[in-house]
Amino acid sequence: MKEFKKYLKKLKKQPVLVVSHESPDGDAIGSSIGMGFLLKELGFEPLVINKDLVPEKYSFLENNIKIKKLDDLNQNEKLEKYLVFVMDSGKLDRIGFVLEDIFPKYVGIINIDHHISNDFFGIKNFVYPKMAATSEIVGSLFLDLIGYIPSEAATAIYTGVMTDTGNLTYESTTSATVALVSILHEMNADFNSMRKFVYENESIGQIAGVRAILNNLDYLMDGYIAYTYLNYEDILANNLTAGDIENYVDYPRKVSTSEVAILFKEFTKDEIRISIRTKSKIDANKMAAGFGGGGHKRAAGFRIKKPLNEAIKFALNKIVEGLKNNEWNN
Image 1 (cartoon, rainbow, N blue to C red):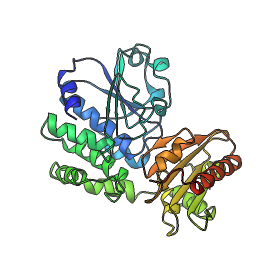
Image 2: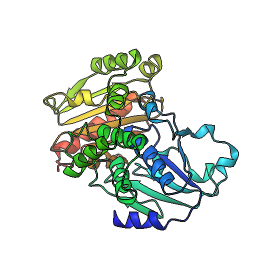
Image 3: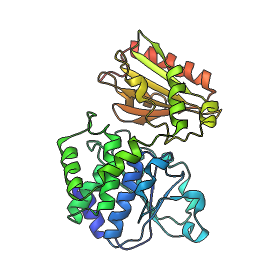
Image 4: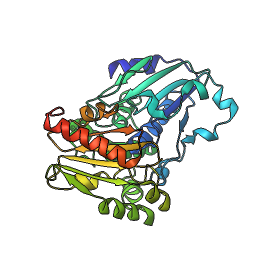
C-alpha cells in the first residue's frame, strides 16, 4: 500500500475516470463511490461510470457521487484525456466495453483490485489479494491519506466490505477487515440503511427467481456438487438483473453435503454466466481458470458461449472429471 499512497500523493491534477466491472456488485459499487470521494478529497473531479445501471438495492449509496451509465455520457465527457481507475476487475474486459472505443483520448489505466486472478493490465497495478474487498483497499487509503472518511463514503465502503465478505464470515476476512468496519462505524457509516436496502429489500420477482432456482436444484457426486440454473424465460418474466441474483448461488452452497456450488445464468441465449462457490477443500479460482475465468479461492466465475443445456452438460462433465483427478484441491 505504501507505493499506492506515494503515487496518489504525487498525482498531478487531470481528468480522472472511475469504472468497475459490468453487472456491478456491492464491492464494485462501494469501491467506485469510495474512490470517487477519495479523489475529490485529493482535489480531483472524478467521473464515476459503469456499463450497467446500479442495482436498485445499492442506489441508496448514490447521493453526492452518482455512477453514470455508459450510454448516458455526452460527447464532451467521452473526449476527455482521462486517467482511468479500474476498480475490482481481474481482467480489463470485465468492464464490459473497449476503453479506446468510448474514450479515445484516455492516457492510462490504474488497476485497483483484490482478485488473485488479476492479470495486471494497468500502467500501474495496485493489486492486494490479501485484502477482503476492493472497498477495504479504498478505506485503508482514505485513513492513511486523509485521516478520516466522510460518512457517505464510509457507508459505501462498508457496503462493499460486508457484501464481499458474507458479513465478515468468509475466510478472506482478516483482523484488519474487522478493524476497518469498527472505524467505519465511528465515521458514521449508515449501517441501518445498508441492512434495509441490501438485505431487506427483495422484489416479488426476486423471490420468484429463488423459487425457480430451488425447483431446478440438482446434485452430482452424492451431493458434493450442488448446482442449479436460471433460464432466460424466468429472468425475463421476473424482470431480473445480474444484481438481483448475485447471491442466488448461496442457495446450493447451503446444502450440507456440498463442497462445490454452481449457478448457471442464461441472460442471453448464446452465452451462459456461471458462478462458483466452494467451502474449504476446492480452489474456485483455479476451477474457473480452467474455463477462462477467475476470481477468488472460494468465489469465482466464468462464461461459456453455448446454449444453456449444452453449457450445463459441458461444464459439469469437466468439473466432475477435474474433481475426480484432484485438479483443484487447495
